[in-house]
Length: 236
Image (cartoon, rainbow, N blue to C red; front, side):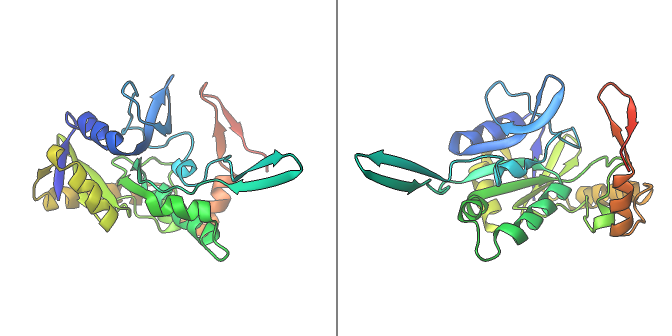
């Protein structure tokens, strides 16, 4: 296991972005969403919930699948190139990691979506455990452990930074890439304490003991909170 300090995190991210596309939470005009890393990006790893999920990295809202060309009386169709280079998605919360599994069941089932499959093959997911879950979270209801992020690399917030642990071969390759910014350290006690604290918070939340069906109904009856602070009932 390794530790990355908050001070070195910008250097680590820059090192990753130098080698591949890096998709991570970025704050813009007070709103945090996943976007591509740039030198002047306001990276935000503290906000628990982004406005949109990071699934666009694997399943964009729109994309070019093929191009048609006409020359004289002949028409040709050329499929778009598949993703063939690695890229990283950084700071993904455990619930969003689980959402990738749901997408997999749809788009990797035969006949598989080759564009989605290529992105999944080359995408490296770095997840971040939820240091302070919110009352509106439904993770436990749907069997998601917010303290144990399942991805290529898992991170937990600890004193002065984050614990870093590679979970897969892709995660190990990313770790080797950024090893200069990591400090090898036995953080077992600190990580276990963080996990216990997260689970204790979740167990106290009002939605923790719902069944998955109850959780779905509760979400439907929830209120829509507008950024102005006003709450409006959702339609029945």
